[in-house]
Image (cartoon, rainbow, N blue to C red):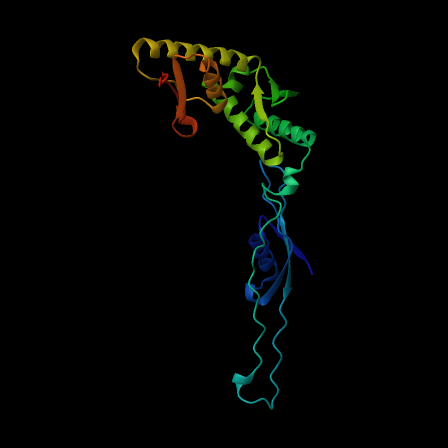
Length: 249
């Protein structure tokens, strides 16, 4: 029997029903491939089903009694979509090698930047707790974006991709030129300025919202300043650091 494909099982069944000019009640469905949505454009698979027309009910013999004694057609089995076993949290995804994940992530970043008109070349460096993807382009300003919004958004996607494919905890950093180094110096300067203001006025200072890795710089930079303490407030991309006087007991 022919097979039919679709983005999911139901779509594949609908494709088959249309081609065979039959209704759902007139066929039996065999799921050959459940399909997979994939992640960030990788690993997507179509669902595949086989449709078999149900046999026509046997004709009632002439000697049969009242129609109520006719053999009813076999009940049509309900289509239940199986739960995919290869989703984002499944073991096969988690067991990808670091080399394979690194290559796929580099290809993904190259594809995105090409689509927004900022083609890049990438080389990767490693240390104990982080992996840095160095993006080289002639349009560094556009790739970084206002206040780093573009490169930070790409870094969030890259970190999410890595976390879904690898078991080990590793920080993914996207670097354009020496932007991260320059930004770390700026953030440290803002932290020192806020600390001086807190000591002078006794009032807490709220810094501008920052991504997690920049907040980490502030917390670490002011950790040795015994006059102030820091904590984060807010949600998502509006989360920021509060610098206040250190509590004394």
